[in-house]
Image (tube, rainbow, N blue to C red; front, side):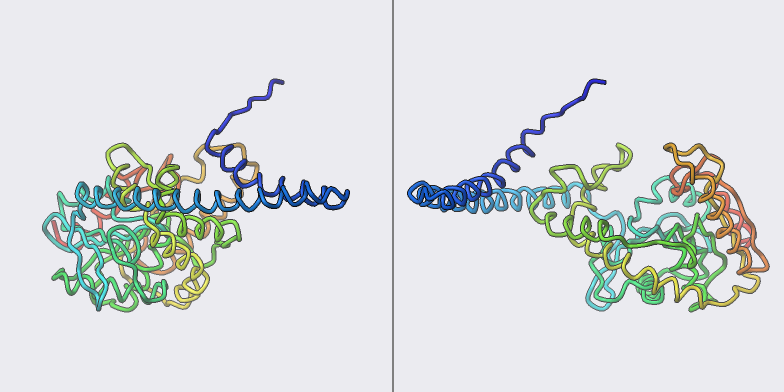
Length: 360
């Protein structure tokens, strides 16, 4: 079977640059051991020059990368300004993007890491029959980093303050995707009189396993510390998505504080799950649970796929116990990002609650 070898010139140059001093150091050691002291001294002198050249190279590359990053951010701020408004929340600003008219107002909250763009295919459809607002949690999207812990109780309070200071009026239909489900459930318990209904879109469950492995920690820290020098942007490690929103996602996700926020929020998942686990019943509050399709074709060969998906479905069904007025929909053919794969299913779930509450 032939072996395919791909040559990466930049990667090879970096490996050579970093590896050369170690090779020279090894050669100097061998020369010293074998009593070739003159050779050893010559190698050590050359080694000092190599180290000096490497330091200069790293400094120059860091300066070039920082300039590239700064120019890119300035350009993106001009081309892709926030579509909504930035509202001051006691010293930091959160981004709120609203459209449409009519109540109750629909509030959209995304998963662990994301932005208002997660609702790109949903918000325009909702705006046809109701007012709808998507927002960026502190440290994501166009919002400033928040100095507060990334816990559902804190983020629900931030959202409440954001809506009040932006002049939005309850009642609200709260929509939470994945991790955002923690926030909307917390909001409903803290401000019950403001909530007309809830839609959970493949919502995170407090009993699910969500380990934060050392590889994940290392990756997020690496992204955080290299983003100011433009490395993730240059290597296309950030951004992506469909062509119409890819440039905006690059502008949003190629900044260092995004990864610091993601690290903090992921690290706080267990504590946040404990907060949500302690919440009581929602009474008869309308609740619509939209879940991914457990019978969809797996993206790769995975013998544990079916078992894992059936366990997830059971967790989703447990949400129905939160309200005596709960319904459940499976988004056929969809994976976790239901609002992207099946926006029609999400919009219809929201529409049913809005129509019921508004009498349309």
